[in-house]
Image 1 (cartoon, one colour):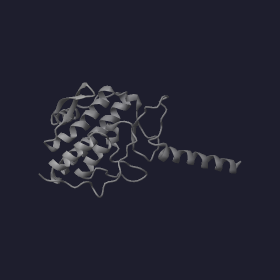
Image 2 (tube, helix red, strand yellow):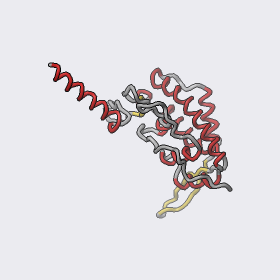
Image 3 (cartoon, one colour):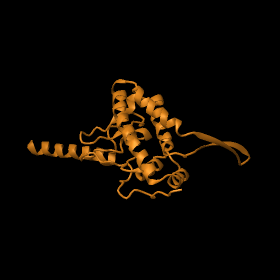
Image 4 (cartoon, helix red, strand yellow):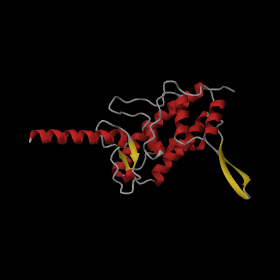
Amino acid sequence: MTIARSGSESAQPPLLVADDPALDFLNTRPSLYTDPEERIPDGDALVSWLAAAGLLSRAEEREVRQRLSRAQLDRVAADARHLRERLRSAVAAWAAKGTAPPASLLGDLNRALAAGPTAVTVRTTAGRIVLTPSRRFDTAAAILAPLAEAIARLFAEGDRRLVRECGSDVCSLWFYDRTKAHRRRWCSMDACGARAKAAAYRARQRETLVR
């Protein structure tokens, strides 16, 4: 048994602004007013991101780090980055035109899903019988199964009209618009929304001075 590092020293904090884990995954290589920045550079960063996104429980995160070596995690992180870039074009085409994901991407998702079998345990809680699903992570490939399920659910159950890219022309982040009026424009009001408001205010001030 090899214990991997508890976290990647070079990894940035996760950007969880999309209101959808599959789109948050796309945002792990953001362009935020700069060149693209890699947020899952290695296996440690991937595991930390999966836990932060709620795709691994903390107990599952500990299990993965105990069972799998650094090299194994780094290889599956490379697979995740490859999956992410294939997903990016598929999401863009689906959101814009309703184009179905390519068969090659569906094949990737099905392989990831097959690598992560789920077991169910039964127990008694407060006099009630409860079935609890649990996942086994005997292989590195298995840790992509929860992510693959989130991606599959986006395409199968999501409304493509609510999948959007940030309205800023210098931001690449995606999000799922779950607002009541479905008028969300920005990845975050604290970031791009605030910048847009400030820019609009400055423009109004300049217009006032010109008059």
